[in-house]
Image (cartoon, rainbow, N blue to C red; front, top):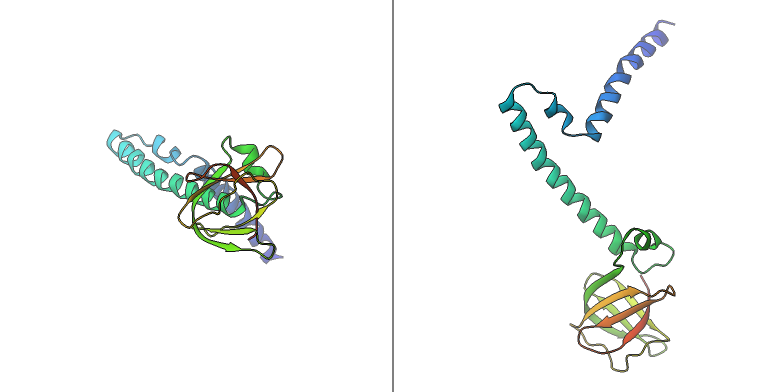
Length: 159
């Protein structure tokens, strides 16, 4: 019985600490705003601002990595399409392979592998080093265009 009372009291003591920690996570500047000395408050704001710039940059890098990972998979990249206006991805061609049906299979420098499917207007072969820009067509298919060529390839993501 004594253990359960002790555990209950310890839990009651943790609740305000958890709420305070959650509030600090929401507003990193709250601690600085509560300071009364001008010099200390300014130093706190400067330090928090520098930290937040790093946090924002890290979040942007993580978001871009997630975006690159799911771009091209129709069932997984719908969130990108709903949240962004420009739904494109660009990367240089690392290697051009030939598929079992003589279609081009294109490996990009970002690690994505795309396979040519029917419906493109590009008649020439893609070359290593060309810069590819992939966009999602209104129909849901993906088109790959190149700065060095005219037309486009209709493509599907392989990996």
